[in-house]
Length: 347
Image 1 (cartoon, rainbow, N blue to C red):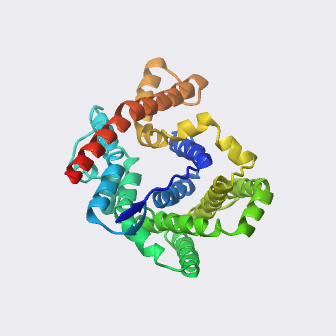
Image 2: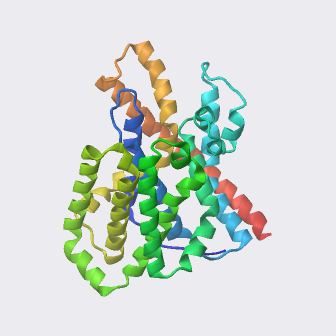
Image 3: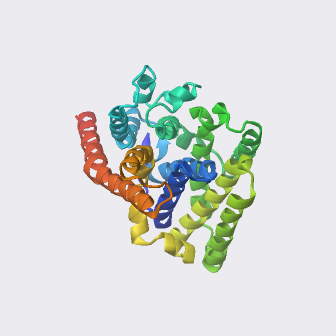
């Protein structure tokens, strides 16, 4: 597997990652009435495929390179997952059962039983499902790059239609929402989208169009996103979420290539927002731990769930915890594992 390193950095999407992670947190808060979680998770699946293709596009398969890629990816996931699982075991109410075995290896989503899928840190189901897409990514990348442009567009549209039908007919069904091979569809859409974006970016007419109408197109996407959240039923969250995130990735990528940013993407490119986007994975994974700790604090301090003090303490603990874990645990552990494995593979 020959990996083609991509130097392109889509700064607005880094800022968007924090907004999406924050939306997931709001959906899971006890008093929340948010119902946009499915749409946001679709965005994360598609973005994962998009960025994997952008940074690790594969032209040939080689076992050693494949192993390097998987180690580099999972060294950022497994250590934090294990740490969160150990933290849950410290709670007196947590009962250690045989369900912990698939959870340790992030295999819980292969078992159609919610008591297993959401055992321990319930947030880990997402990375359990996404892990399969990471494993098969080299095959998806190599295979899709052999297709012509027309076939790629046709495949994307067919997959989108399939997603729309399945999500309406199989709402909240395990085999559509959680089963790892089913979510490869979302991941593959991201892979195909990046390939098509880079293809069309070479056309001068596309450059002229984006340069002239970027602010207007950004406004259209924002309005469409707001309308989808407010008026569309939850059954259509997955296909609508894919269309919206695809439009955002398309505009943001072309804008970075051409050096054009409208007001929305300039806002998402703020340094502090981009920095918070860098810790979005930690924010997502530790949120239920923070909620559990804050429930104990609430009982001690006699706080109300909706009180400003409680919310400030909860979000403050979430952000501070994510920062500490990112810089003091995830990054150094991942760097150590990656260097050790690469050295052995080189020797």
